[in-house]
Length: 489
Image (cartoon, rainbow, N blue to C red; front, side, top):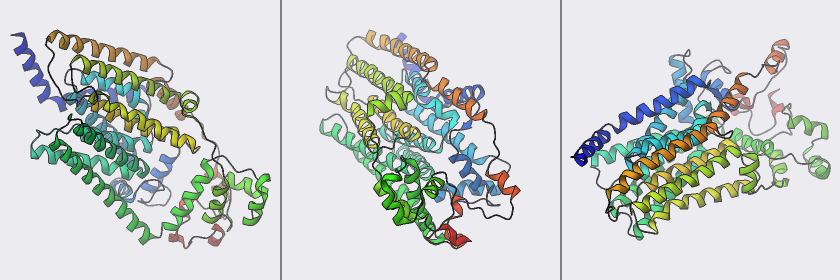
């Protein structure tokens, strides 16, 4: 009798899984947004929003520095429909909601008894900060982890209609992942390829089904097609509108400003060659310049002379990025809990249980690579952390059952113990100084409390006869091709 009642409850929860996931995510996000004001983390998003909304140009423009053309076209079109709606922010909030709902749904699918508790833990540990402190790089990563969650949870017994719908969802999230920040899109594609490789490994270990593997490989081809079309359209747009020269210039410029400055005195021969005095070099470092010797070639010559300052992974986690270090520790603890649960339930073969842990080594390799090259930005770090954590956790729920436990008492115990442990971790994440809540609140209040200082706009208004050039005005649309900015005069 008791078993029949439990089966009825399980069936009801399975039928309403999407509704329950929506309610959980909506409740968490609304509580978050009501407690902490929504802000942008950096000045990149307000600047791009200004171009997409037409604040800088007088009419909405689809071109931005970091995103692909199709994303810009969608958002700028919405501003032409109604410029009074903050479409850029609204799109981000909608994508965050859809991405997290998808992740929650997938977790409830692979962990029917306590998937909701697992999602709450991941939310407070991994998702909370960038759900309220918005940053386009991590919004792109949110879309990427939603796609990976759907990719990893594919089932061999699903109908053709469900499989088609799955690929539509995968294509949707891949589109936004690569169009909002194409570098994150590349990382997402690499993570999807690694997920396929793990499924191949599981197949050879007789822990996966061949039909599921074939469908997963086809879905990966769908992802590549979506990415290829997005990049292709962007390249065609650039060639037609003459953005190639600016992209080349901007790539070298970004490398110039993101790494430690090159010492002028010990490299005087180089600066004499490109015609930069020491005073002029200091001006360029602060971006007050307009000279024909400031171009892609001079930046490239300086960048080639620079030696990156490598950082160790331990230093990065403990000193530069303690919040991500906290996430890494929580990630390992989550994986160990899931491993213990899999052992108790005898799910998967001995080697198969360890396969999802391989995501940890990929994450360490990526962290070491970027740290060794001397460029490790927190938002990018957060992006590839999410792209490793979520598929690894979802993958732990995809282990096949070799045999059911002989005693259902183990099932009842784990159904209580595991959610309790996860909820306790949630409390730790909320109270920890490097957890999502406290970090997001401090960042939000700091950004919201910044006082506006008299800046470039005030100076320009006071001196209307001067010539002023912003980064994106350096393009062929105003007649400049690959040379210096003095040509504009």
